[in-house]
Length: 138
Ligand code: DAT
Ligand code: MG
Image (tube, rainbow, N blue to C red):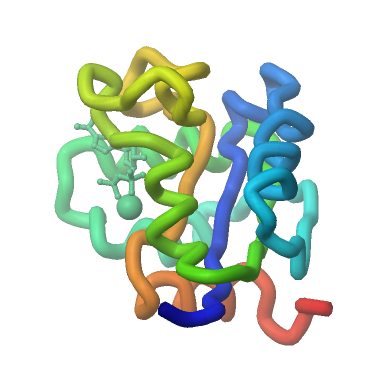
């Protein structure tokens, strides 16, 4: 077990639906510490770099279109095992598998518009924090 940092992003659908406050509240109540946050528009270049692992997937173009369609709320949270615990709090990617009580299980019914991104490993977290918050953390 270790103190980690993870990258979370409320996607344009979550910003539009005004669930940023609820999402931040969940992570604060769990005991994690906010290290950085910003509301921002995303360039295609940044979206393509962020989702580079999916570049060959058939949904890649739609995914980049969606992430660049409106502001996102990017965050870095710190705490014990935060990378894996945040993924559990976010819920499964597929709506048919995301449990009630998770963020996606409470707010999303489609795989493409699923409210929030969270880093899936230590390597992803380090890569994504550098990509989105290079030198900006408190
Ligand atoms: P996660 O966001 O849970 O890490 P992922 O990395 O497999 O999931 O995919 C990244 C995003 O791409 C996901 O949040 C939504 C979109 N996506 C994944 N699979 C998809 C599919 N079959 N059709 C459309 N969008 C998809
Ligand atoms: Mg992923």
